[in-house]
Structure formats: C-alpha cells, structure tokens
Image (cartoon, rainbow, N blue to C red; front, top):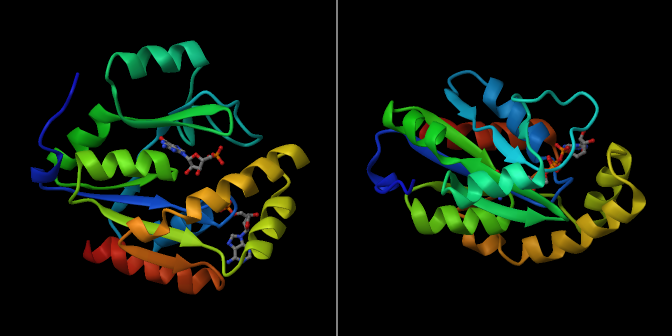
Length: 192
Ligand code: ADP
Ligand code: 5GP
C-alpha cells in the first residue's frame, strides 16, 4: 500500500524530534493538555521491548523484529528507522485516515524518519526539541535511569548526529524551563 497526496489532506501533520533525553515526551504530554490544543499522538510500532509502565497499543505497538519487517515490507509504514539497534515506524493508514477527517496528528519520531516524512508530506510542520547543552542531556538521560550505561552512551553518540539535522526543522524549542517549552509547543500545535 503506497498512499499518495499527503500534502492535500484537510488535517495537519506535526513532526517532533530531538535527542533522546531532551524531554520530547514530557514537553509533548504537557503541550497536548494545554487549553485549545486539539492534537493527538500517533502510536508507533517498535521492535524494542516495553519499558516498565508502558502499555501495548498506548505508548507503542510492540512487535518482534520479524513482525516489524513484515509490515514494513508490505508498505504499511509512512516512515521507519533503525535506532540504537531497534526498529521504529509510523503505521501509515491510521495517520492518513485521521488527516482525511481533518484531525491534527503529531509524530514523535527520530530524525531519519522525520526526513522521510519531509519527502512524502512536505506541508507537515517540523519541530526540534533540544536541551540548552550536551551536559544537560547526559544528566537527564542518566537521571531517567531507563537505559543501561552502555545504552546511555550510545544515545549520546546518536544525539550528536541528530543535532546536525536540527537546521532541517521549521522550529527549534530549547527545553530548559519545562512549562515555557510546553507553551511554545502548544502555540505551534494550535496555529499549525
Ligand atoms: P525524551 O522523550 O526526549 O527521550 P523525556 O521526556 O523522557 O525525554 O525526558 C528525559 C528526562 O528528563 C525525564 O526524566 C524527564 O522527567 C526529564 N525532563 C524533561 N524536561 C525537563 C526539564 N525541562 N527540566 C528538567 N528535567 C526534565
Ligand atoms: P524510545 O526508545 O526512547 O521510546 O524512542 C527512541 C527514539 O525513537 C526516539 O527518538 C523516538 O522519537 C523515536 N521513535 C519513536 N517512534 C518512532 C517512529 O515511529 N519512527 C521513527 N523514525 N522514530 C520513532
């Protein structure tokens, strides 16, 4: 299945990226609860195992690498990427149908996938969330304590590459003060 015409749909597509630990999830959750924000997150598929507290179908659709490859090879993903050894992708049909209904949909995805969306849906709005500096990123990742030291190290190496693509985004939000960052994102999601 290859869907054409993403740019001509009545809804609005937003792509939010940023290094792991920059606070994307936290800022987005707050922004989506701000008054007047009528947008919702797309649920991605991933081959990574669930973290404690994550619920299948809510945070992610959790698949085996084989199941992921099957839906990817059947053309069912709007974009996909391999990130730190795991596969991640956006199921195309639910997003397309929501945009057809005029909804506002947010993809929280890494940079390789975001560049694929830019090719297929150039009218989407691209937002990059970052920390004020690299040390803050390292501190937040270690404090979150959801990855091993080796995984944190890998995410920090990846973060440097992700930053190199920040200039491809329409807006860069620095997540130092959480509430201010959420307000900034909320105003983008309202306006589109
Ligand atoms: P991401 O989704 O980008 O990987 P998270 O939203 O999980 O990042 O945030 C990483 C960690 O940083 C979490 O423990 C979160 O509570 C914390 N955090 C997020 N934003 C801020 C902020 N503005 N100030 C301090 N800590 C923050
Ligand atoms: P995490 O394992 O921390 O949940 O996510 C790791 C990275 O994968 C994050 O940068 C997140 O934004 C990204 N990600 C989540 N879902 C998708 C997706 O569907 N496609 C792509 N390309 N990246 C995703």
